[in-house]
Image (cartoon, rainbow, N blue to C red; front, side, top):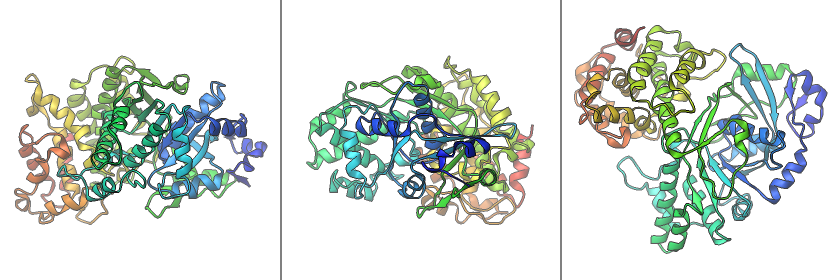
Amino acid sequence: MLELTRKGITDKAGFARAGIRVPEFDIDAVRKATAAAPVWVHLSAGNLFKAFHASLAQRIIEAGATDKGVIVAEPFDYEAVTKVFTPHDNLCLRVVMQAEGGLDKEVLASVTEALAADSAGADWGRLLEIFASPSLQMVSLSITEKGYGLRAIDGAFRPDILAQFDAGPDKPEHAMLKLCSLMLHRFKNGAAPVALVSTDNFSHNGDRLKEALSTAAAAWQERGFVGRDFLAYLADPAKVTFPLSMIDKITPYPAERVKEALAQAGLVNIDPVKTSKGALASPFVNTEETEYLVIEDLFPNGRPPLHLTGVHFTDRQTVDKVERMKVCTCLNPLHTALAVSGCLLGYDSIAAEMQNPALAGLVRKMAYTEGLPVVTDPGIIEPVAFLSTVLEKRLPNPNIPDTPQRIATDTSQKLGIRFGETIKLYAADPALGTARLRYIPLVIALWCRCLMALKDDGTAFEPSPDPLLAELRPRVANVILGKPETARDALRPILSNEKIFGVNLYTVGLGERIEGYFGELIAGPGAVKKTLEKYAAA
């Protein structure tokens, strides 16, 4: 019997027999050094953190390049700390699902503290201490794109955000306001420099983070809670920076196959738990082999030696090119295409979708025909090679148990980046023009078809969580499968919404084309399959 605890991993022979590596460094010494002079805090205790950030931290400790680990703070789902990290003494188990089917298993002990970033909770005082520390170099985030939003779809501040502006910085609830409050505390206690690094998977993430914090600070200043000097601190690049980054690491939900393999190896008490927020939290994380992290090199207080782990630190222009390559053309849009198609066709595996000639044809044609013409080679990662790996190795890998339902989460928040940016480039270039676009409009039509929450066979399905579902689904409430005429004008309020797509799709000449595809997709049961085969089959 093996336990994922500090006491449990002292059974080195047992873990070795199970094929699980355990840390060789002095865990107590690392935790003591980090507590005394923290250098890295990460917001979000989710799967991406466990699979990637915590692993990077472990690599530099093992290399002897640092005696400091990473402190994780969870701003939303506090049970990800109390039900996962705390019972396992802040250890986690990283399982790399290799393409040939093997499992590479390792205990990570780089997380020195796991805290609930609850401004009304017991851990908040410790977070304030950490943010006041002059040694703090980097605060990274992986809270997903919706965690940055302060406004409703109409552009106005959400009522809950306005209430938090009015309440001031003492008891913030939204992740951005929590971070802004912690930065205010840092400002009041010496105003030491620090880098705030979004590693969330969307375009210009650092700019979005800066905008959110600046907006919160300005709102508090208008209400008399902070002075203009705090706004000046956040705006001073010698003090606070917001580097752009591009991250690429697929981390599916905990896989049953992995859980069973770990149980057979003798591990106990590792079952995933469902939190009260509805998330599936687990002491183990399963992930793919491939990973990339590129960060703009703007660190006013120094940075952990992550360059030793293969992280690229470079200039803003290069990060922008890499990010656009991945987020706007060579991976994320393909994931979304498979996600919405898979929900409609009843798939539960991205890899299985890639065995469907029409779906494989859709993403290949969208990538090579519509994506690559607007990609600029960033120099550090070659686009065609990157895309080839995505299409031939990563997406078809049956050992990565990723689901279209997971990828479809928050799709409305992703469309502007994953498709809108490419559409803008086509619209702005007379040599290209949006008249050439076929597959991107088809994917947008498929997403609209998903809003009906009916599979291709006409049976209902539960839509993936999305903050705009309540606003968007009523737009298609009167559309009837098998009666395309009922869709007349239903999509116009959606497709014309620049807040969703970054452009008015009618203005750039795509609205009517998407409506046409949508009409074909609702012609009757089986119409989705038929339409995909008509336009996309390889």
